[in-house]
Each structure stands twice: as C-alpha cells, then as structure tokens.
Length: 245
Image (cartoon, rainbow, N blue to C red; front, side, top):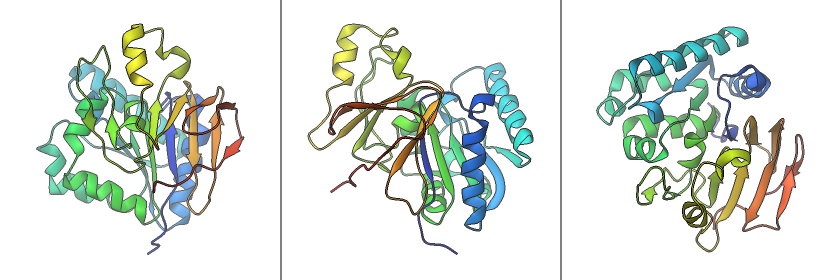
C-alpha cells in the first residue's frame, strides 16, 4: 500500500452540490488510483446537533452526489464522541477513496473528533493515499486551532492539526455580512507563522497527492490574507504554501 499522502481539499462551501461534482470526481479518482476503494465516505459530524430532518437532508444530498459519480455512499452517523469511538464505524473508513468532512459547527466538530479512533482512521487513510476534503467547518478544523466566532460564542478550540499553519475563513465572499465587526477582527488575528486564507463559496483550494503546489477549483476565488503576499487566486491558478516548520 502507498505511504504517500493523498489529495487534500479545503472547500469554502458546496459539499454534494452539482457545481462541485467535478472536484469530488477528481478526488475520488485520485484515491482509487492509489489503491483505495471506490467509496464516498461522508462525515456529517459538524451538523450532529441539528434536527433529524436536517441530517436526513444531508444524507440524501450526499447520496445523490455519490450516485451521480457512480460510487457507493457511506454516510457515517458520527454525531458525538461515543460514536467517534465505535469500532464498526472506524472499520468503514478503511481504504476509502474519498472522505468528506462536511459543514456545521467547527467547534463541535473538533471537540467530537479530536483524539478518537475515527479521526486516527481518517488521518491514516489520507496518509496512505486516500483523498480528504473538508468543507466550511470541515476545512477550519484541519488547522491547529479553531478561532472564536461571535455567533458560536465559543473560545478558541484545539483543531485536528493536519494543516496546522493554515487558517481558513470559509464562505469568504459572504462571511463578513454575517458577523459583527468585533468578531471579524478576532477572526483575522492569527499567530505568527500562520497563513490565513479566505475561501469563497463553491470554491476549493486543492493539493493533489505528490504535488508541491495547491490550485484553486471553483467559480469564485481564494484570498491570501496573511502570512503570504496578499493576492486573489482564481480557478486553476496555483500557489506553493510552505510546510509547517
């Protein structure tokens, strides 16, 4: 089995939507090409405190996308730390071509997954060639820390640390319309050595396994805000982001 890291996508919004099917197809194919099973594993943990009807909506939307891609859907009902330790659910993660961590509350997502067998399995799958995508909250938690948000009324939360130096503001082209100026100022304050990215809706920043550079996929832009020279990147444009340390 490959020991090379798989592809990684940080998505501003749009999981399972038709506008993002080409990206999800690319990520699935990357995983399959590295020997992973052609399954689309969907992790709704960030929405774990939403209603049953809402969770059913996400499951149905994900199923439609998996069907459009011609692969099997595995929708993992991991809504709390107990389920994140369930060995049967951990087993389902093994050798999946694409694991997609969808949106919701980033603090709840990080607190639920950190230091659990499910997160270890997800990280291990990616480290051996499986693709991993995080949308909105799912992109934010891959950093070393999830920042405080005014509307979540939470202190900073320890992140999952897969991309420790990257801080993502998802829904960037809409985000600052939703939060007060005081919360916006806090969100843009990042530690020295960090790189702050704004990723617009229906847009992703992607690093394919084995490549040094990241590229933009989607209809809007990725904004380099801090830690690198400020600029905006559009679809197919590339940038090299220095590794942590």
